[in-house]
Length: 501
Image (cartoon, rainbow, N blue to C red; front, side, top):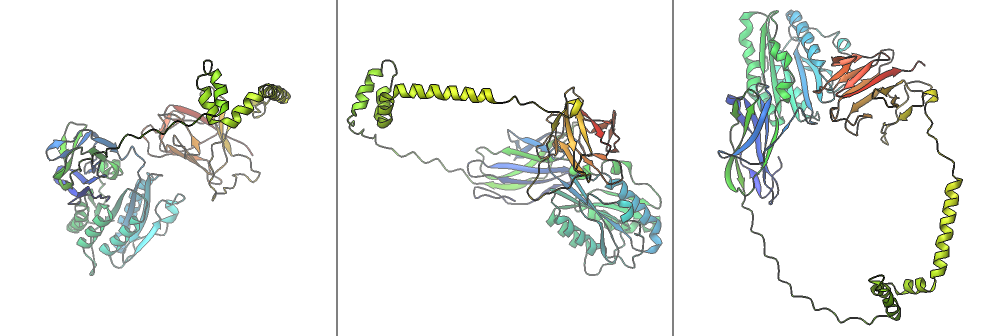
């Protein structure tokens, strides 16, 4: 928390669980510009229509809301599958299948990791592993645990999440809730999760209805960290709404800020949200204090300076005074540039001749230069775009041993622009840090990734954007590409062409 001498927070996180909103509010800013700020997240992921901050019972003017999903922030999930008790083999397989379907949503902004636990924690897929083959990693995973270190392994998973570079983090705990720990408790897990800023998703799966009482442990971990909870018995399916809104349980909401203006002293601040359905909800109030702004110090009174007596002007200045009617200021300029004024006065003919000679020489050199022709790509006469920035510590090898490009993207707007594909991973978006930059407001800052694996068709993946990725007229989350496929990102379209080598 950023705290300044002029404005500081008296209480920490404000939880409005009864109202369905979780908020963290604080006062920040220097002495001259104190501001209220609230990070908000809805327990039920609903779109926010309007957001303001209340100081006491009055809304602050100039409140602004920045949606987390529309920004550049990252979110991270750690799936933890209970593999204890060989008799739960079918349940473990169901859990793995569930995680596989949710892991497909991983991208540059949605960082995901997967592990299993029984008496210990095993990390199967590390956070953000871009080349993880889910099926091969889980081929040997089975229900083989002899004991269940339920709380201990949850704490270890939270420690792993703590190191992930993300603004929001969640532990997805998939278990029957049968804890056999002796040194740790639910309170230890909840305390550690709140200290790190981790939300716990509770997914309780019981073998039979008589064992559903154990799911209370999973539910308590979720509710006490403001996370969602779902459960099933036997082969019962989990709620469709939970699967559809899985990531939005963590990524909804955003940041509200507002200037405090001249307000000072003790006060309460809280967020007020208006949802798309017209519902208005408020988060719990957080106590804050803003020190009064000091009165500005009066400016010191300065005595008017006494001008020095004028210095005698040199002879050259008096000569140049004759030019003042034609070139005002000639006299003063000559006084300030005495040497150059003498040279100019005595060498005007030489200066004119010299300038004329330089102009003639420059024109001769320009006439001798050959015309510069733009050389295209053979008969097609395409202009080739290179927009692949390289850092000093990078030395990517070409896709082909010959160094030839794998293919290229060519524009569909009638121009002859093309982007050559020379690396295995091509990031596409509006931001300048992308390999393939598209200057179109309908394209997201980080829109898609084009990826090539040896011996397989290239793949394009949507980075969870609003406008999405459309291949041959069909919107896709991830798709294999063939030469000639037309790709549309927002209002920009281009064709993928593979080069036969």
